[in-house]
Amino acid sequence: MAHRKSLIKNTIHVGGSTLLSRFFGVIREILNVQFLGAGIYSDAFLTAFKIPSTLRKAFAEGAISVAFIPTYITVMKNEGKDRANSLMSLAFVMTQSLVLIICALAMWKASLVVWLIASGFAPDQIERTARYLRILMPFIFFISSSALLAGGLQAVGHFFVPAFAPVLLNIVWIIGLGIALMFGLSIESFCFFVLLGGLIQFIAHLVAYFKVGLGFGPINRHAWRHVSSVMGKFFMCLIAMNEINLFINTIFASYLPAGSISLIYYANRFMGIPQGVFVAALSTILLPYFSRISTYAPKRMSFYLLESAKLIFWITIPVAMIMGYFSKEIFMIFPSSKISPAQVIQAGQILTIFLAGLFFFALNKIVSNIYYALHVTWIPSVIAMIGTAINIGLNFFLMRTYGAQGLAMTLVIAAIVQSILLITVLRLKFDFKLYALPFLTFLKRYSLQLLVICSGMLCIYAALYGLIYVSMPQGLAHFLLYKIGYWLWVGPLCLATGWLIYRTRSYFNVSLYFLDY
Image (cartoon, rainbow, N blue to C red):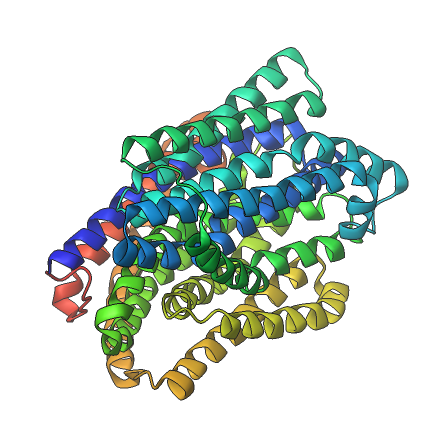
């Protein structure tokens, strides 16, 4: 019970910080559209930023974390803090040297790099994107340095600074956009604010790292032995990144009409709100949790797989339903002068497609963490390669028929296939019990709960909508139904729906191990 309370407490702390970050992220995207629009300039900037952002998932939030944290925890537990500090020193030198080499090459051959990932761009568009890339590329050095320090912090149970750091980045980003809009600065000038946000993140992690009593030790043979294992796992985890598929889809999207890359980016950012607030937070907490359990109670992992799957299903399905229902309205918050009504509809459709795969995107993170906790990285990597092959193959067919929406469909299909394969291999190779009947029982009870509550809330929504339409003055009604004022009453209604789902779960016998204590 103590472990459950601690896990949920840490998840709430991380998720709360992430929620704050996503709140600022929404403001950031509104200003992004105001500053960049949804056309050739936004496509250029977002494509340039996607390169360090994708590397960020590899050398920061993704591959390096899942490769480093389990090993760091093992060394800390079995060999002591001094050798863990030595491991940190060597891992820092090796990974950051690699990052600096990648940065130098990308800045030197920026036009070639842009052509490789956006070959559908015209020559002037490639050169414009290359200019932005040369400024933005060092961003990954600050973020990846922060990630290694975050791994050490998380290993000793400190999650606040790693969770709060994205808030700092968004605040600096928003300030930069505000100054750029106020003084008419160029996009190149704004890129330096992005670099400043990365630097502030790094400083915050460094201060916290020393404050909790960690440090950097002398590099010795023990560190070399462990870091070779970390780097091997890192390169295998790198292949398993979902962001590779997003990166590939950017190449395909560069052949679509101007603004397509931006619409996919904006839709993915909104889909990332529930992913970041809950799924990424839970995944961050569960990785060291799974790593500890695998050392003293490996047979319990099957049970934790079941309960983790139930928990993420419990949160992602209603969120996907609500956001999918209001998908078009979500993009009404963007300035109408910068994004056309047709683009609003298209962005809403892309978001709805992404949301259809939200549970599977989340499940893949949790199940992959089980493999990483077991120190098995090659299986998720092979399965990810299969998903990537499916994604590329389907892109050729679905993009021609459905455009940007087709590219979103391929990501969802690939995620579903990966989920099936990841769980199947756990069952066959590691003798995991899948507990299909308990999950189906949970699914039946939860479906009934959602049907009752969501039907009732939908009736309340329809009544309020009609009341505003017929009783309010025309200007106020237009603000509350078609502008940002829409969320002043729909937002609380959505929160009330979530609160009811949480409070009434016992009436429908919906049991969740991590919440029922």
